[in-house]
Amino acid sequence: MERPYRGVWPVVPTIFTEDGELDLEGQKRAIDCMVDQGSDGLCILANYSEQFLLSDEERETLARLCLEHVAGRVPVIVAASHFSTRIVVGRCRRAAEIGASMVMLMPPYHGAALRATPEQTREQFARAGEAGLPIMVQDAPLSGVEMSVPFLALLARELDAVAYFKIETPQTAAKLRGLIAAGGEAIEGPFDGEEAIALLADLDAGATGTMPSALVPDLLKPIVEAHREGRRDEAAAAYARVLPLINFENRQGGLRACKAVMREGGVIRSDHVRSPLGPLAPEVRAGLLELVRPLDPVVLRWGR
Amino acid sequence: MERPYRGVWPVVPTIFTEDGELDLEGQKRAIDCMVDQGSDGLCILANYSEQFLLSDEERETLARLCLEHVAGRVPVIVAASHFSTRIVVGRCRRAAEIGASMVMLMPPYHGAALRATPEQTREQFARAGEAGLPIMVQDAPLSGVEMSVPFLALLARELDAVAYFKIETPQTAAKLRGLIAAGGEAIEGPFDGEEAIALLADLDAGATGTMPSALVPDLLKPIVEAHREGRRDEAAAAYARVLPLINFENRQGGLRACKAVMREGGVIRSDHVRSPLGPLAPEVRAGLLELVRPLDPVVLRWGR
Image (tube, rainbow over the protein chains, first blue to last red):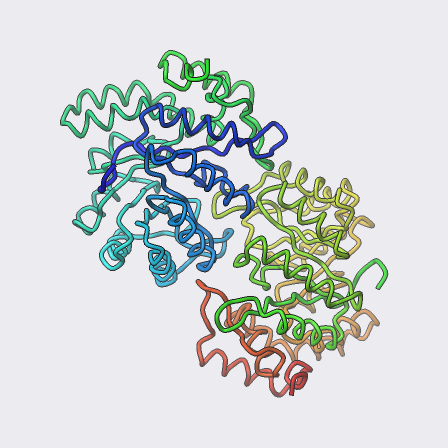
């Protein structure tokens, strides 16, 4: 795919064995399933990849494995956030070396109290951009850092690398509209995020892509495509069909949902998430499967 | 020192070159200075060690270097917090292997949104305790996790390893009093923290130790000792003398303060802190030195 990147770019979950070890064979199968679902690109080492539960060494192992295994079938974004600018720069350089197409960064944060100032964020992103890859700015509540529309637009205008924005804070559509108006052509890719729970409103606001989970990218892609081609009624109907599932994922299952469905579909052997996170409650798992089965997504057939 | 541990256990700053590389020679000198200041123990890889700006590999390098260089002169606490229980357990095992006397843990946290439940915290601390070292629970605002007095007392009673508590949340003295009352003999070491800014109130509340920065442990030790020996007036006077400096450190300088003073005293060559943190403003540095000079602490003479 050539720039500007658009479409459906789901987050690759990190696959573990029941004992919590990296499951590299399962990881490859998850990637293959996601490519077969028609994903336009993939994102690795993001929050829904449990990046906060990985060692530095595991990140390196996973990044290398994923890029080698994708082998150019689709472009790959590597999430590279860390409070340390030095570590971020190292991760961005490494992503460029192994063939990533983009990096994704939240502003610097650590815990509940360490939150970057706008100047610190700008400086870190400027240094990250020197690695040569475009940057997707992830505007998500996890960082605790509030980034205003004027600040995001300034980043896009002043830093060549900063071109994509995944907006996941409350009232996404208003923020996307404001960002597109303020940033103009510097906003190469305004993206929807957060499991695509606000996808229709965000497409209406001008989003050209979405970064959902790996749950049902095959069901999201027709929404994005119909909307792009002006068939908004079709997009709205398709969104309404999938929304009960996505809402349940977003509100009840979180990052465990796509793993549970991948396991159900025989894509992976274990849907283990690492401690202190714990397994889905049986009732939540049952509710999830009840919602996903009638939609008949690729993931439920892929490994059977 | 035999258990129960008590007294002054400052945090070892991580020493960098001007380029932001680890300065291992400077690190050894910082440790020697801290031992020469009469520290009863040391803590490495804590927040004032810029732990959030270190790679996994650097943590390992620093832990090994510090334990080897201290070589039993004083006991060493290794801070080992991470959101991942697996990583915490690995760090605690490693700390035991290299001869640490204790580990220090905040409850699991990541960013502004991921905060452990009491059950998740208990489980992580229980697993950490299997490494065989006593645990100091760090109750600090950085984690964003609120731990109540009944919960802290429950940890102390139910988990053999959990015996020390460093209380750094607002109203420390009331929390220490409540904890000592609720936990009884299970509270082996109630500690003051946060640069010892509340030291006198915390000693009055029953704290038996403090974990300050490395700024002036030699000036804090007489306070703790006088208080322990019943000479409270002497302790209060000594605390009042040092408080303007500690207040300035806590409110204006943060973790950069002790490095600036170590550099001034010829202990280390650079007081660099890693990006996105930046250097002290010249006015803050001047204000700090103006307050520290009349107190004539060891650190200002050590390297001259």
